[in-house]
Amino acid sequence: MKMRATKILAAAAVVAFGLTACSGAGTSKNPAGSQADPYAPVVVEQGFSQKGGTVNVLMSSDFATLDPGNSNYVQTANVGQLYYRTLTMAKESAGQPPEIVPDLATDTGKASEDGLTWTFTLKDGLKYEDGTPITAQDIKYGVERTYARDVYTQAPQELNSALTHDDYKGPYKGGDFKAIETPDEKTVVFHLKQPFAEFPALVSRSNTAPVPEEKDTKQDYSNHPVSSGPYKIKSYDRGRELVLERNKNWDPATDPNRPALPDEFHFSLSTSQSTISQKLISDADPNAITLDSNGALQASDAARLNDEKIAARTAGGFLGCIDTLNLNTESITDPEIRKAIALSIDRSSIQVQYGGARFGQLVNSQLTEKMAGITEQKSDLDPAGKPKLEEAKALLEGKEMPKKLVYGYSNATERYKNVGTVLQQNLKELGIELELRPIPAANYYTTLAGKGMPDIARAGWCGGADSSSARMTVDPNLGPSLDGKTYGFSNIPRFYDQDLSQRMYELRGASGTAEELGAQWSQVYNEVMATYPLIPTIHSYTNSVVGSNIRNAQVGYFFGAIDLNSVGVEQ
Image (cartoon, rainbow, N blue to C red; front, side):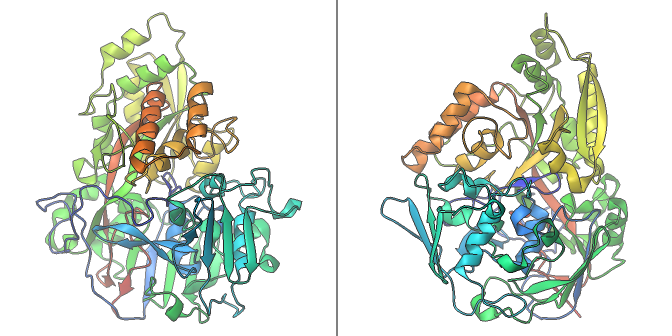
């Protein structure tokens, strides 16, 4: 799933995601970066339970979409948990791995003995915002919509890749979708290609948000998706403002996971990040928060987090995100040239653009020791992030070098432009001119998935980065398409190698223990990464300042920003 410039996969072990360097939530009494463990999570004013009031969410740009069937974005998932529900839910808890819990379903599903069938039963009393009942058929229809890739270009595909019936093209082109059965209004049965232990996590994705077929307006559904959660859309002025109000037909007795404390959420969708940063630090709006990456903090404001009063309003936490620089393998075809580019980059200077070590750790791999069965991760990159210019230049001897490359970045975030400036200086040492090309934030990943993909683009993979399953990071980022014939949907570098991609395709159906499969996925990852389709950079830690009336503010490991589900507001 993507967060403007960050993808996130809501899949993990059946019970929980892994979490790096977090041993428990701290309080907001100390600066987020000053504890004995500088990466410990910090929650602002936790334990609040009062209902009422309005939370003002300051954002630099609009959501890419509000349609759960076209959402591969973490910001949409964050706000989406307020107005739609799914079969299961990845429930956040500061200092703890998100836990997969039942949501619309009575439990996290029941698998058949051979692991090829999963059955879910819906709870009683589930209703949409208009009072009509939510049915199993609505769940199935919600999944069916995500197969209409000609209509929903950013529909999540990880669940679909696990199901049978690859040739299905969505509900608008006819045909019976046999991968899901609904024998009655409360039962949903999924048919899988092969056993998939993490399947309860896959159905926490927005694919399984119910959609009533009679209310489906296709692309216009993004303007007012029908609510199944505690809030519904009161008004939506694209690019300007979104207002959510309480959904009176939501029954809290069916939903122990959503406290639904505020009466309303007001989103301003065109506030510059510098303005957001200033407003939050100065406490100009005591009811304000932001979902912008890194709390919208500007580099010039970072030192103010040491102020005791501001520190008391600063939530902090590791994200399940590892940032990467993706090299377009269709335009930079020579692996040795890609390796030379990787070795030439001063990743320690990139870390500075993120705000320094306080805002994230340098990494050489997207895989972590938390993943089952992981073998040694090999990398020629300097662990401290320093460039290896002489080695890079030696690789280029006798090569036909590209004279000019393009780095695309999300125009809403200044540090991503600044990363491009670092890359310009680095690649100049190789005789390569680098053009910096801003891409509208709301269209960032649509651009990367289409013909506008630049030679180099920054992205981040979240949630899967520290999950217990290596597959949930390797396959989406570098694996092949559903049929194995080209690169996959979330494969930004467009990596495809006849042998390595075929191995990944076959591994999707492999059997074995979590350790055995993890070892196989990490081995193929090592071999793919030897060709440098992407360059790991930073494992992000977010500091997010909130208004003085905000309570229960925690940085979601899953969302990479303030968790909207947890917040309340003092009146």
